[in-house]
Length: 116
Image 1 (spheres, rainbow, N blue to C red):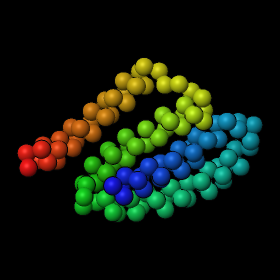
Image 2 (cartoon, rainbow, N blue to C red; image 1 turned 45 degrees about the horizontal axis):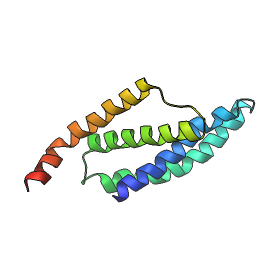
Image 3 (cartoon, helix red, strand yellow; image 1 turned 90 degrees about the vertical axis):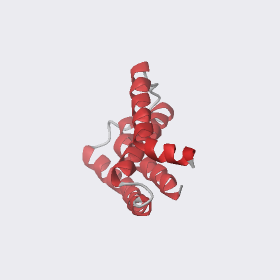
Image 4 (tube, one colour; image 1 turned 180 degrees about the horizontal axis):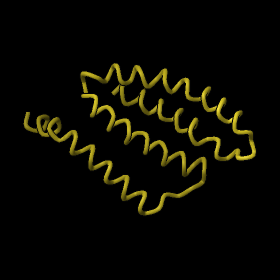
């Protein structure tokens, strides 16, 4: 659970670093890049421990897929609340396919937990 919490926090910082500047298009690019680097620093400080703690509980591919679904979830919320952009139905369909991928990836673990 701690791994997932750290990944959520990490992705919140990274989403702000990558996309927060879109509301400030008149700001010079070099300033935006430097600000993004400063925002991204806490992301790395959270992402590395999340992966280190999670590896063993999850495989590396599982960690990556979990991180991707968290990343997209955080981005959808950010896009709606901060950028004021509503997802289209195709965005939701793509998101549903990624969620399906998580279930496929975790199926052996889920099936084992259910049979025990």
